[in-house]
Length: 245
Length: 78
Image 1 (cartoon, rainbow over the protein chains, first blue to last red):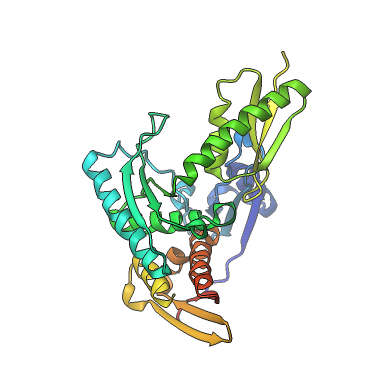
Image 2 (image 1 turned 135 degrees about the vertical axis):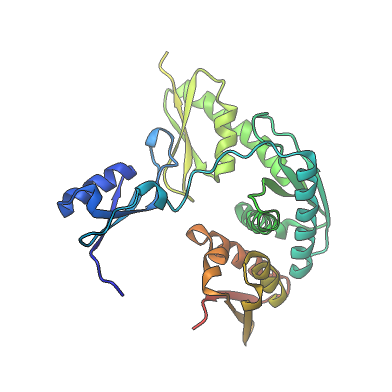
């Protein structure tokens, strides 16, 4: 094993982390190998986001430094072209078979239906929706939808592996997510009113990224308030801020 | 439950032949031990352990159906 000196740095941005590391080592950029362990980010306006993490390895004499950007562990993905109907049908049928198989192994009897939904945004690809229908399926939702989200994650991973790219699909049980979305919109409007009335920022309960997105979108057109996300997952929450008029 | 773990793991890895699930009964509690090829560890664990945690949730729900408790441990081959 080679035992070259390495240094891990954490800072608000990748550049700052690298800069701080180089200063600490007293070396220039071409004398170290830079690995980006975590790009950080995630917070709106850099507020409440994850810190960036880099590892610097001191190079021996004669070793050339590689460009840092080729070492990124989480490369920015090119946006995929809009999926064709045939691709969506493909994802839908694989997703249906996958969910059926998972439920069968879990000992749960239910019907599985798929449809291609239309997202309200229009600029995002229409997701495939897998709806599980049957009696007494609350076990499939779980506390804070933990079970449903686990089922959705595993289904996405398996389908993604099968089709060779990440699968944009939603797994729902008895339209639970639809109802939850309606409740979230209502909550957003109510808390926005409260923020305006009291002149104080309102912190909502912790939510998943998808749930926070619903709140942000619901209040995007509302000029009287702005929204931000604060804190770290899984405790990250939306804050509704009244605008000074 | 063993079949559930095997199905998920085999569907996610590059080398399904290296997937092995052992189970050990411990009263009303079952301990499952999943092994996959070293190169496939990342696929069954996921970023910040998200895939492993999701598997654990599903295994626990399946176990609760039979009034059982189940635990899932993931390791690479010796």
